[in-house]
Image (cartoon, helix red, strand yellow):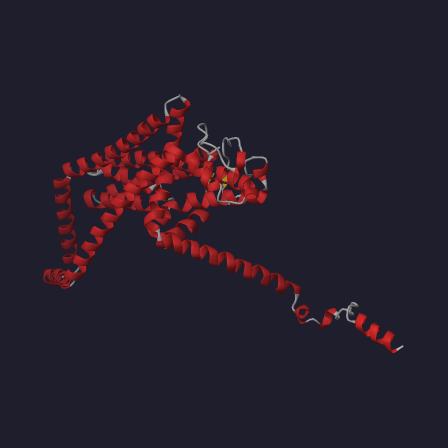
Length: 411
């Protein structure tokens, strides 16, 4: 009997014990809503930390990242021209040479026009500036400020400049360093641009192979949709910038402003920074009109700027961006403000196309449209994107093939 009891005691160790009552577990005392919120919170913190580390790395390597992003954006701008050459059986090397030389020629022509008009109008501009300063001095004297006080303010300003001579010299050295960085960045951008145009397919195949085999198809199709969106955005933004520059430049010309061509070029470049660029360049145009031609011409210039911007926003944007990207004003303001705070002017320049790319990629992955290669649906996006064509997806070995010459995507 004792042996039976001993054997029974041993087997009791392996018998399942009664479960602890649910109410006795401390975790169940926490409300379900709080547990769900906590689960979301720690995952959100992990994602935010990962994004923060990524942004920090980008800032640390900005001398490499910015030229690469510029090269990608230029590729999106010139790819329609290059793909047209490729479709007409022009050899790839010749298409690259023609595209790059044409782009450089256009930029050089714009720079030459600006330099030519500034040099031609320099004497008149100098006289107008002297007249404006003299008029401001007379105005201050008329409102009760004596000439002695004005001279005293000028003397204080010159004394401050002399005291800060060392600081100004350091700033000059910093500018020299910045010029060196700019030259290095320009060379790196040019080299990256040539590599992307020459071997985009090879670069993309290598990039896709970095992902697990089961994820390559999704990454490939999502990146296609995002890249097509960037191409459409860049192409449309180029056309909108050209129309803005021509409209405001013609207005400055007919109002007989001395720097009509530089104003047009400034508006063209500023239009690539959504909203902010148009406002700043328009304000500069009005200020130039005020200084050189008086308040009436400045008012007329303001009307021209507002008219061009309103036509662009309410007529051109809906028509031209119908097949590209329709950006909600709130989304534009938020991403441009965030990009400028993080990376200054480059951040404001790349904010919208980068956010559009990320958004389209995220929607493609979450909607599962990558399985069929179908374009993403506009109602799921912060802004609508409707790629005209999506190249066929071939996944031999899990990697992407050569660049598709028809729509500029890797296939």
